[in-house]
Image (tube, rainbow, N blue to C red; front, side, top):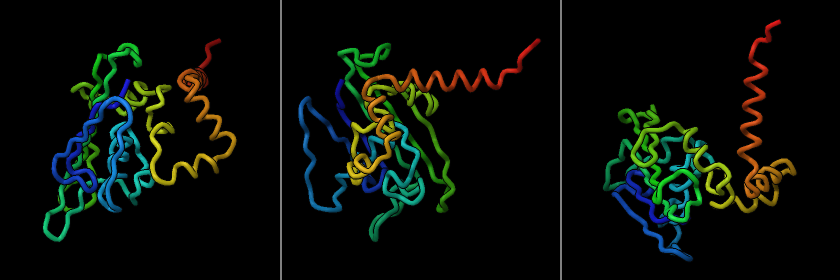
Length: 194
């Protein structure tokens, strides 16, 4: 599986619809400071379900929406679509191409945010469906295969429990551990009959 493309519009510095196409192998994005290199990586993480504005170098989630410039009005929406080549069947049960989209809208000029929608291959889904799709693939929102500014230091400074989660994700056991925890929680909430 590999990342084929990212399409952004209204996301951070990408006011106009912008598509970044990736070939197999290594792709390098170069440019001067402030040109949007980190925003490309953050758009990928955001589309895959990142919900922490601080992880995206913002104060609150509306900060991901293009804020405008002296010569350009602010936008009231942001959307990102990520296309992955899954022709090798890396994600079982998914098609040869996987397209994940996230859209959010701001209501008027204020920061009241309407968290729009998530889509997988054009179908509306829940955030949980996106998490489930990418769990144990190394591409989830909490994965360390997408490393943004400052994340390397965070890995080195992580507590042993946090490092364990990184290794569990890499080993492919995190989804089973998560399902076990959810099942135990449901069992504890079920009333016992005598």
